[in-house]
Image (tube, rainbow, N blue to C red; front, side):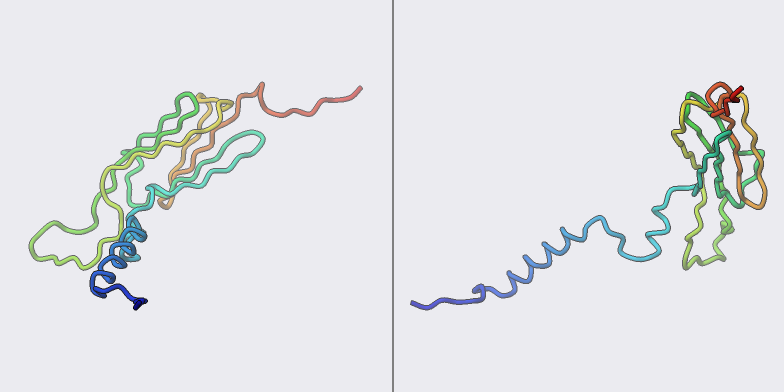
Length: 146
């Protein structure tokens, strides 16, 4: 009796291995540039103080007058459009385009204890800063002992 350690068709085994590797790695970006394109836009930072929640949205190259910011039932929405920085003509050949351009909409769930009537918004150097005050009766307060 003869036992073989390798399959009889070695090329078929390589094909099977290639299919397994393709299945294993499917869904991963093929290049580092694809990673940057899959990120959520705009990037945000969120922080909380006892009095308010502060949201920083990084949106360079957008006219602040064209941004739409809403807060309804604890859901903050930031929407707008970022124009393309590449001129549209036949004379330009693009080798890499990693900067996001186009319409965007970002929604963030915040706590329900925020006061939608007390929102401050500023835009400077491409950063949208929102300060949303907490409702006064829900803020922590010091109780004086007599």
